[in-house]
Length: 226
Image 1 (spheres, one colour):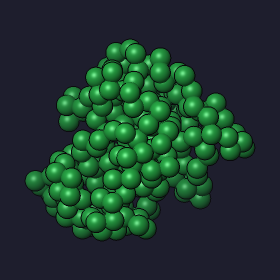
Image 2: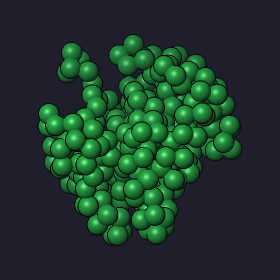
Image 3: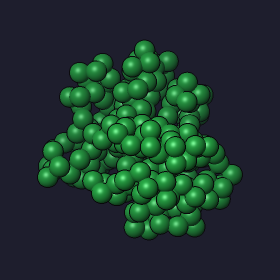
Image 4: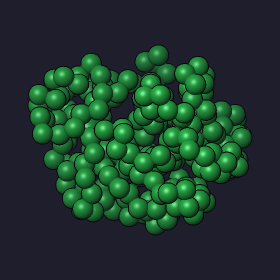
């Protein structure tokens, strides 16, 4: 599945959809596959969870972390970095973790022309059918329109990341497959895969045998879960 994706991979979606955890997993798996990898965090203000929080883990595994200069500080100053411009002009695999909703996608719009000049991207729209404001295909597809307009890029696939955090079970995941398929159908997009905590991957595969399952490690945890 990873080998089918373009060199520039953009991860977008609603707040709390699981974009950051997915972005970290994808970056780690690209690295395991032998690629030179950079993970760019385009949350230009300080949300609760962000890729920059995993700089140590990523760098230990040979992945470059590109983040706004004020990431992981107490300063809430919108700022972008020229490092992403430089990496776009290489042959390195890039995973871009975009801030939630259209407001976060506006930061991505700053790089849209450079991304197109570098060969374009795959933009994955991550959906979690248990999150407020994206519990129906109509709500989720409406949000995608806003993200595409703000980023000046088009989504190429949908990813089903429906979960209830620590309360997730295989059935919880399987129950939202139809929601994800309907969301993808609204734009004529493929449902690329369903992200599943690795301990559930075998069971979920047996429950949704005609769908691609992508096992993920849960790196992003609430403070009381650590």
